[in-house]
Image (cartoon, rainbow, N blue to C red; front, side):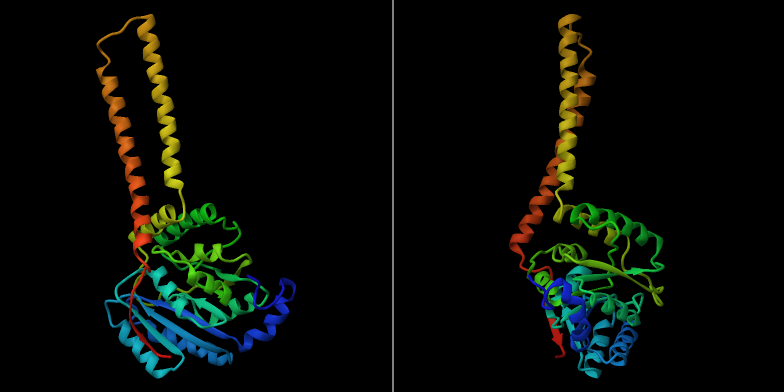
Length: 327
């Protein structure tokens, strides 16, 4: 698809004139952020109105258990630029962002967290960078304020992104990013019950860049991205966007088959040259146990793939909308 801003050589010049009158959609997934959400919305509104930019803020409540939805309703009541979407139940951060992107109308779409670790004032750097003609711009944090566990998990996910989505090694992926309307429309048409936004953005764009921004500590509470969430994300990457586990087990299976063939040939030659002994039961038991155990593991991995294929075919979306307020 050709960019709406024209040929690549003319993009930067055209955007410098067009972005100021473009509609900017800010998608914020909300989960148990009752204490932080009003300040997040307030500072985001202040940024856009201070820079005289047209905007909308889409707050997607991902099944919060606290009073976050009431804060969303208050924000919609106080500001006509705010839209609130309430999901039927907790569907995960990436599903909530997908929902927000599909409701966004902007020429440029921005995603950010609800905990003020992505300062709204830093959006200006994303806007200025995408004016140079990029499809997607990810923030690269000067200093990360995430806990150690999340930083370690980010390294694992980054390695998988490089292997699975052919991510350039110099590009850093974060939840603070901006992308064009064309990319948002491609993403909105992509149907999966296991969405992974950074990977999907890489698949649906060709010009990707980073820009350095500030990253602040979370002022209240703890991050919702713990060990369980990181493990689920790694599993989603491996099983939904890659055949790596199956290929790995297939390779191990070939290795075990070759080893078993070698052991069998050795004992065959030994029986022909030396004669057989009755003392082969331990070896037979060990080999059978090992091979049967490997077969069970391999069947489990294949079963995981089959179950996810069934989910893709039987479920239309990874989320269900309960309420929409605003606009």
